[in-house]
Image (cartoon, rainbow, N blue to C red):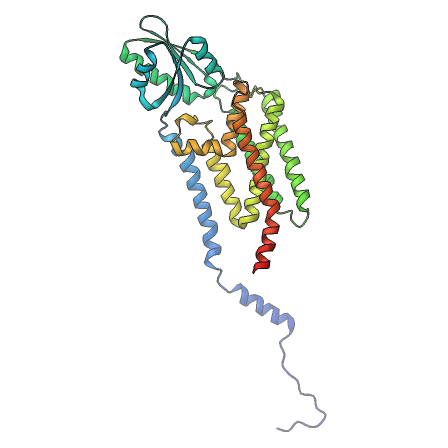
Length: 346
């Protein structure tokens, strides 16, 4: 058919709104990638499996291993070493005063001495942990029963009145670690709002506030942790900073997987092996090594040492906490430069 001159031919075009709706419908009908379903499920299963395995598994059958005890006398140390084997680590002491000094400085958890014919005297540090002292008492009672001796037990370093189960240090460390984790998680969402140096100031200042609040509540307010206030604030500030900076770094470097990894590392493995619920001397060998190297375990040791043993072994835990916070902060500062180098190389 011939179109008359001057007539405009109409072209059927799809209106923009209809095209957009059609494109959206087509996009909505596409099947989501398998990874979108699989990754959150696998991460959740790993977290719950690790949590149950650590907290329940470690308490399933705790066994004493190389628990340090001081033993006085000429023959008794050898007899105890032969009778109890690897369950204890015997520290021979020349006299009762030397042995008791080792006990109050947290070098040993108990002192065993002869207290007359067929009489044994066991002095324990209850502040070393109920599970640990109970294990030592059980071992000594078994030895005494076989030797036909009677044991008198005295708690030389008891727990605070408002911490009769010795768990205040664990709950304090858990709470501060959790607060540091939440702080670091929130800082991940502030990249477009705060510059890097401002985020550093935020993490540092908020960590100090977390440590101060936790120390004041648990110490002067509740009376459950009899540690000197200022050293306790320093310890808890370092713990909060270690958790916050580690969370920030892993979340930045690993993306969506970073927070679950931090949860496993600090909140699950770190707190479960901290040695507060189950004494460190009753943990399996790998867990004992991990316990001293992770921030929660270092913090629990520092809190206990400050509270009951005059800070005799504070340097190790404080160095551990400082290294975690400092190394994580350095890695956060270097991360943008490393990304730029990778992009330039690509």
